[in-house]
Image (tube, rainbow, N blue to C red; front, side, top):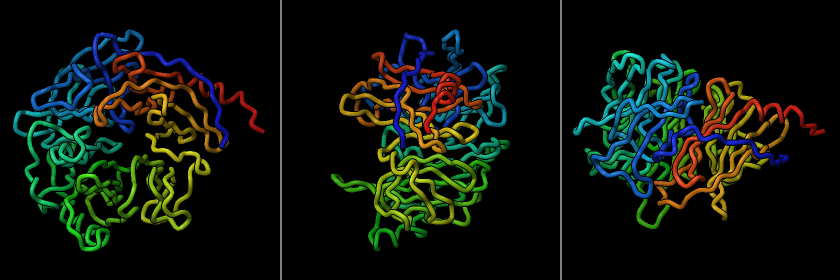
Length: 399
């Protein structure tokens, strides 16, 4: 793959009066000229019970922040799962909340202030906005504090894989949820075979619907003993929790993004792909098969947060800090075998789960890149103009 460099201006849209971030790379922060944001008061430690984040709007161009609510249901890596409601973009936002006893999700109309509630916190919302998936964020806090919530303890703490805990499907219209796949069912499906009969405590770490909400993918990880690395299994299932498929057995599996309803780009060790076994790279893998291929001929051999433009023609990726603590932002045209480095940003040192990843994401029309960064000495939200990048790519003669 050809690796080229051209810097494009990154514009900070968040005010300079505090610590701002959006959150994860596979959530949508932009609707028109409005960008969703969290505002917090510290960045050098994990949040404690009772500490809240502000939820609000940044008007791109004016770069002002309007606080709409506060929440104690947040974490450093994924925030409060703040996002526009796919069923009402520009009108409703979704975020997780806490009432002092339980976590739940709030759906807020930004124009009227009207709120409605879902009985569980959201981990992912379907592209059509009809359903959401929920997991145990308290358990996740014990596993990886940067991804879970601090308010209350895991009610299933002493159970390795409870029959009463697991993956819940929420009806976005009624706000009601039901358990569709228990931790015990998940363990029975893959755990006994993958761990050769050994008993393990497990949790679900990352879960997303595919592009038509017909199936979802989730990572299952074990609570490894001190000094040992946890293992990850990747499973897909129908929206009702049926027809489970073990896409990748216990090994090194990390970030992913659905390209379409059947294929996913996935940074993993490829252990179940006959073509290459044990190489940590980005792969394109077809669901319900073990068919896959390297992305970019093996160029993407470091973990990254990836997403596609809406037309799926360009791939957006980042890197973790290099030896100079620079995080790199890249746009790739895989059809032309080209990776264009568009910027490098200094990363402030922080505890692992408090770190600020770039977590880049495209606007719905693909004309803006949004990302979080600390290169100015505090957390901020930045945008890069994709029209300029496309215009430059069109000038390149790679013959």
